[in-house]
Amino acid sequence: MSEKENKMEKIVSLCKRRGLIFQGSEIYGGMGGTYTYGPLGVELKNNIKQLWWKKFVQDRINIVGIDGPILLHPKLWEASGHAEGFGDAMVDCKECKKRFRADHLVEDETGEDLEGKNEEMTKIIKEKEIKCPNCGKVNWTDVKDFNMMFKTQMNGVEGDIFLRPETAGAIFIEFKNVLDSTQQKIPFGIAQIGKAFRNEIVASNFIFRLREFEQMEIEYLIRPQDNWEPIFDDWLSQQEDFAMELGAKKEDLRRLEHPREKLSHYSKKTIDIEYNFPFGFKELFGLAHRGDFDLTQHTEFGNEKLEYFDQESGERFIPHILEPTFGVERSLLVALVSAYTEEQVGDPNPEDGQRDTRIVLKFPKKLAPVKIAFLPLSKKEELTNPTKELFNQMQEKFVCQYDDTQSIGKRYRRQDEIGTPYCVTFDFDSLEDKSVTVRDRDTMEQERVKIEELENYLTEKLSE
Ligand code: ATP
Image (tube, rainbow, N blue to C red; front, side, top):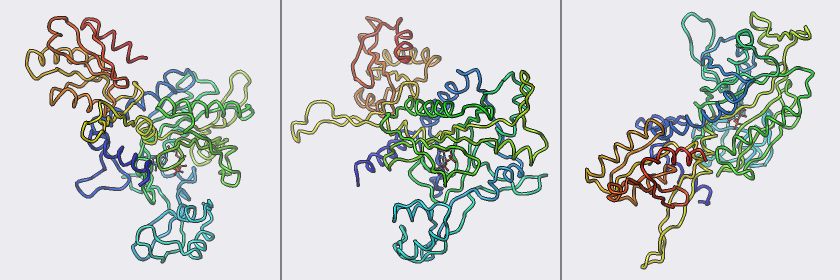
C-alpha cells in the first residue's frame, strides 16, 4: 500500500473512531455513497458551511442567499436538459454483474478521455480485453448512457419527480422573486447551500464521490456585454482562497480548463479547480460561464420572462451567468487531508529506540469542531467541580468539551486527534493561584493563565 493510500485509510479510521464520519446504514450492511456525520463531523461540516456563507453571502453586499426545495417541478429538468441526459456512460460485467463507469475503465487503460463517445469506448474495452476490476474476467455489455437522477413521484403532480442532482435549478427559477424583493442591481449573485443527489455508477474514495451530498453554489449575474474575463478570473481566485482557508496548500491546487470540444454548447469557459487528494488530482470546485442558457430555457418552459430591466438605461435583457460551485463534502475532505499530521514525540523508548507517534488534526481554528477542552487533573471533586463550573461558563461562548476520564496524557492525545486548538487543565495549584494551564495543540506549549483573564485570552487566541 502506498503512503498516500495508507494516509487515506488512517483518516477513514480516525473519522470513525472519533465520531466524525460513519458509513451510512452500517448495521444493515452499508449503502454505498452515503455517510452519517457524527457528533464532531456535523460540527465540522457546519463550520465549513458557515465559513462559506459568511465569505460569499454575509460579507458581500451584492450576493443574497436562498434555500430552495429539493423537489422541483418536472418541467424544470426538461428545460435544463437533465431529463434527457444527465449522466455518465456505464458498462456492466456480465460475469459478476458489477457496474462501472466506462470512461474511467478506458482512461485507466489508455490514458485517453473518451467521455461521450460510447461506441468508441465499447470497441476499446473489447479490443484491449480490459479485465473487470472486480472479478478479473472479460465479458462486457455495450457501453450505455445512464441517467444519474433519482426518480420519485409526488401526489398531485403529473410526471416524474427527480431528487435534484444539483442545487442551481432552484436559483434560476427564483431569479425574478429575488430581484423583485431586494434592491439588487446587476452584477449580483444568488447563493444556496443544499443537498443534491446523484445515482453515481460507482461511489468511491470515502466522501469524495457520494450519492447524497451537499453543494454550495452561486449564480452570478452579469450584463451580456460585460467584459466577463476579469470577473471570471476573480471568481477563480476566490475559490482558491476558500480552498486555502480550508487548509489546502497552494501547490496542491491546480486549474483544469475544459477543452472546447468538451464544453457544453452554451458555455464560453469552464474550469475545474482540482486538489491533490491522496488518490490524485481530482475536481474540488468548478466555475462555468453559462451564458444566457438557463434563464432563456426557463423563460421558454415556464410562465415568466426571466429578464432584467435596467432602470437607468431603460434596457431589458437576459443576464449572463457565471456559476462558481463548491462541494461541501469535498471541502471537508480537503480540510481532513490537509489537517492530518503524524509527529514523533517524547524521548526514545530505551528498549527499541522508538518514539511515540502523536496524531493531530491541525485544522484552521475556525473549522475545529471543538475549540476548547476542559480537563481536571484528577477525578477528585475538589478539581472536577470548579472545572465543570468553568466549562459551563465558557460553553456559552465556545464549543467546549469536558473530560475527566483516563490520564491527562491520554486526554491530550484524544483532543489532538479531533483537532481541539486548546486544552485547559485545572490542577491542585489552580485552587490556590486561581490560574489554569492552557495547552496549545500545535506547539504543545503550556501557559499559565489567570482564570479571570481566561475568556479574553481564549477569544484572542481563537481569532488569530
Ligand atoms: P465529477 O467530475 O467529479 O463527477 P462533476 O463535474 O460532475 O464532478 P459538478 O456537476 O460540476 O461536478 O458539481 C459541482 C460540485 O459538486 C463539484 O465540484 C463537487 O465539489 C461536487 N460534487 C459533484 N458530484 C459529487 C459527488 N458525487 N459527491 C460529492 N460531491 C460531488
